[in-house]
Image 1 (cartoon, rainbow, N blue to C red):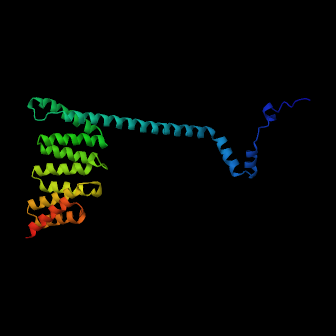
Image 2: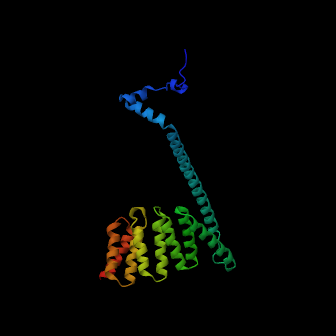
Image 3: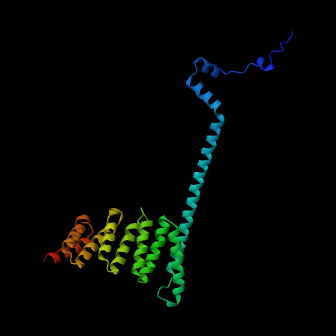
Length: 242
């Protein structure tokens, strides 16, 4: 047979057409066949997307592992700070340089970290400043501890200590505000009744009789089972109303 020179070899090549593609052409393709065809036609893009998701997932998991390791390390460090704090002699003038260096190191740690580790660092600073009777620095440290320790038991405790520091500076309103914030933690704060009584005492101290009576009555109404503070509150109510 003589070949027609006008025809090329490519014209005699019949492309393979799958059943799915035939279905697409005649409109009889099922949903699963359409999905299979889409995957076949876009397998490279789908592969790249899958790889990107895998990289993101690996990065997320690695981030969690690293964050957990850093938290563990920070907790170990803060416990070491606590051990060193207990061995400090704050009354020995010859150790003042050592104490100052420790305060600087601890401040840097607390500022750098967050959460419980940071709150513990600031609370240690608050304790040091209280022992040194540096009430302004103590209030600042305890306030920072309350802020860093959000959602932990340390918040109301830190607020009460900040209240003590504020009172020592003559800032009665500041102390009342700190005690009021601590009481907001309710049942999670075991000594909330004491904080409420302190508000009454402070109001009484600044001759605000009505506010003092209200504060004392709150002790009795909210913590009727706390015999110590309810009895003290009752005695103050009697003294103020005679």
